[in-house]
Image (tube, rainbow, N blue to C red; front, side, top):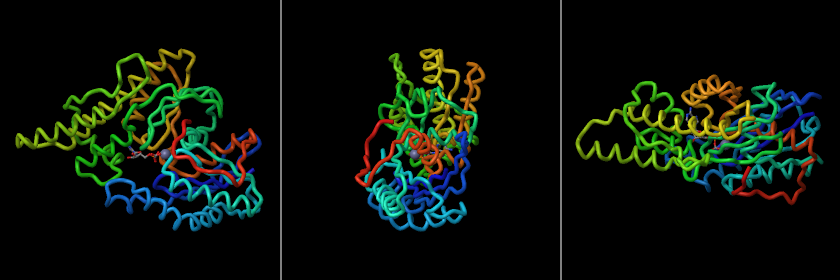
Length: 337
Ligand code: KG4
Ligand code: ZN
């Protein structure tokens, strides 16, 4: 069976066609992402109104491209899937209404998908042997959560950030260091050129929960830079980047260690979300998994950031469960997993 899937929750307009064999093995036939990064970069962040308009401009074109590249027409598609929650409401509504219209006019099943579940499901594309149960870490620009995934559709958030998301903290620190939005990937690279010689506070809240707070690290970086400038001391940007990355990654690793203590039955860790592309985080997770003798699964880099294929991958399990929407489907800005 084949699913045409859409994603427009933030600043990427994306469409993909996935084919599933009888065992549920996914093949990505096409995965088109139209990024709005260049449009938003001049504002230093995503402007919701502009994002919605840019999605409107891009969505028809990427749909033709996704079908073309997959070598299929709408007649070959069994279902249309779309991110319905959470995200920027004006952005979400574009793909939701486009998908609704397509499903209605071609008489196809319509499948609503939760964006975070999509990030997790990206792992089923990259790791065909992965099966629940496992513990997932979702780290993106909008979310940072630890999720116990009991089954493909049965999952529970057991901890996470109480303020800034990990990607958001990367982007804010990058901005202070003069990098264009979103600076997460640039910070990843710059950190290799410096030493983690500045002590920034941990984001791991020490209260027995699996919660994190990234706002403290971000403020500490700002204070460090301001105070150095006041004293006319030189700020070595690469050292700031290396020290921030060290503090952020070690905080998450510490909480993952706590999660493994709390849930001794967990034997697999799964990484998901845009920050899953971070090479320091991937390496640190590799070391943790080896030390704790648990499996580690990560998406290929191309499926870490927002994309349509991950939505199709999650939609497959909704399809099996018969979780379909009709044309009354609405988008929701706020939603748990
Ligand atoms: O999942 P995603 O594409 O969008 C949301 O759902 O938020 O995540 C985007 C976030 C941005 O904050 C971006 O800076 C961050 O992922 N990111 C990275 C890296 N690549 C993307 N952060 C750290 N290191 C990276 N290599
Ligand atoms: Zn995302």
